[in-house]
Image 1 (cartoon, rainbow, N blue to C red):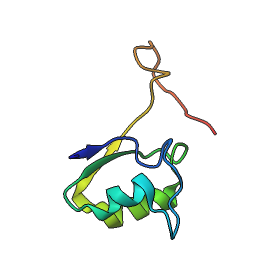
Image 2 (spheres, rainbow, N blue to C red):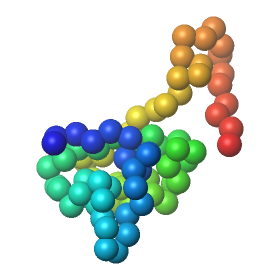
Image 3 (cartoon, rainbow, N blue to C red):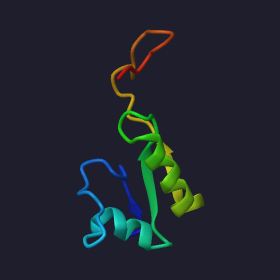
Image 4 (cartoon, rainbow, N blue to C red):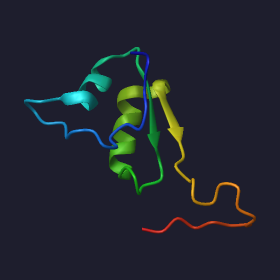
Length: 79
């Protein structure tokens, strides 16, 4: 595996005894990963954690499909 998408989304929780997919991604230094960095899909604390652990291997992505292709000047993504 070289790239993991949507870090933290629909992934089992990481625990001390079961690191799961998230733990495997963090443990493998050569794996790149994408994260939806909007504070809604993933909490900002987890985004900061991912940045510390993955460094330049972390790719910030968007999930703003609602306004895609719309003829609007501004879109506010609310909680």
